[in-house]
Image 1 (cartoon, helix red, strand yellow):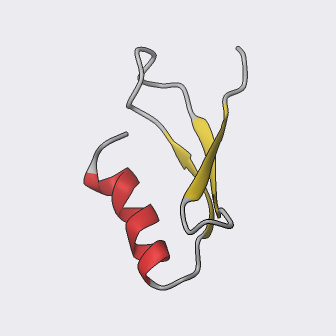
Image 2 (image 1 turned 135 degrees about the vertical axis):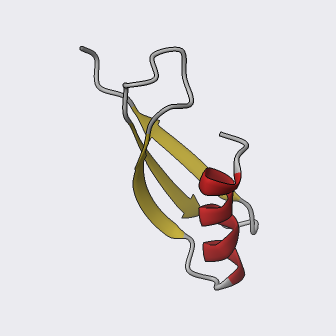
Image 3 (image 1 turned 45 degrees about the vertical axis):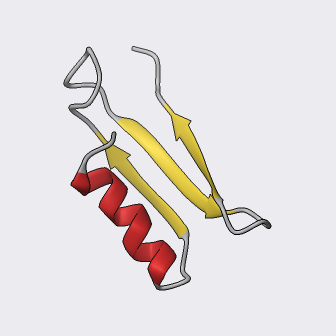
Length: 57
């Protein structure tokens, strides 16, 4: 997840002060076909929360 495609989305939204994202992410885990839903929201101290949901097969 430390890739430009993932991290770049968060950094761009944070720079625009619109950090409220939800997107799907694949190909970064041992099961390369499994999708994870990612939600990123601002925290009160200026940082952000990354919430992840993965459906069991």
